[in-house]
Image (cartoon, rainbow, N blue to C red):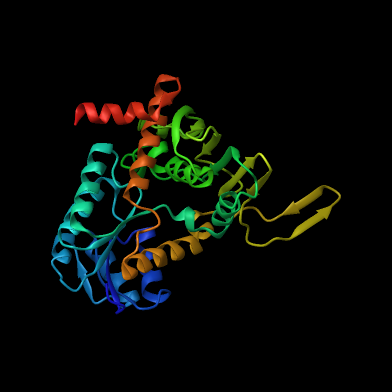
Length: 346
């Protein structure tokens, strides 16, 4: 498309919606937030006033009628993503959608076919790929500096569980939280996951059992290139937001640790002390949200493929569904088994 100002609409003004609105309105050049939509009219109006957004809607379908809007950012609850993407693509809008695209492979596949026919761009919000730390680790591995990747290790632990209302609509641990780690595992290994063996339990809060979910998990991955991976998750890390990764290979190892408010180390008679990790994902990944949205803007403006596409979103959900089945059945499960089940029921 032309190099003129790119005009955005943002659907959903919750935590992540506000982040994207702020970045588009104040930090990314040559773009404009033309409209926002949210079922809460009061909240939408307040956000619009704060960032100078001229149009506010409760019904996103009314927003999509605007021929002035070039692209939409979908930050609404997961169970709304499929219909919103379908409607936005039908209206000729490019779409950035927070993960996951949907909780079923069949509906995601349907959306991807619709996107392909329409010729618009769809990018999925796996923001950790744009974090400078994870990106550097990826670059080291891709450049062959550690040799052939053999082991990928990822630790991902939240400081505190989300509220029950959120949990009931989020799709479970593997499709809400670990899905980022599944995508990162593929990104770091440079290979697809072919088998998953997951053990999951409830150790943090009984509310997870009440909603049919887990709060603690350990996952073993087998990659197509022969490498193996491990992921450990917890919904409660009392010391902060714990995000670490390591890739071990035939010629070396590369790893990244946590971000902290500062890098001081203090020693006294009782030992060494330092600042704990940042306490919230919004702080830890502030820069990554900006960089991923800039990447989407660049792809749309230049007519180039988005760096994280709908297929990436589909594959991450497939791995998540495989992990959930493995945890329920206490056995290794090939990812192909999930695709076969989808094909049989579609």
